[in-house]
Image 1: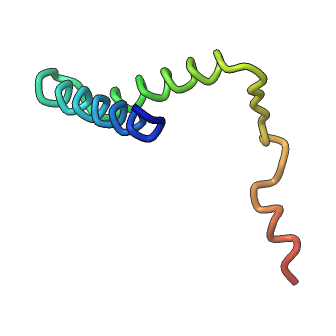
Image 2: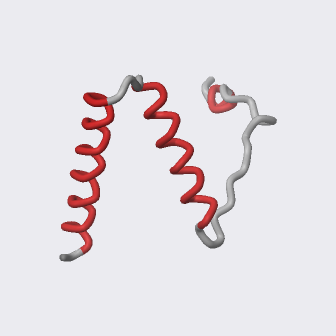
Length: 68
């Protein structure tokens, strides 16, 4: 399998798994999304040289200062 076929296979398996948990378990979508976000964070933290920064000190509307 090439990269794209592997990506498709993973996507389809994940879709099937999520659908199964929605059907067979008393679990809501918020919980599923939370678990997936936790797994995403875990995977990203394992990666080499991945660094996240916070923009909390920046004004989110700062881009408007360029508008005259």
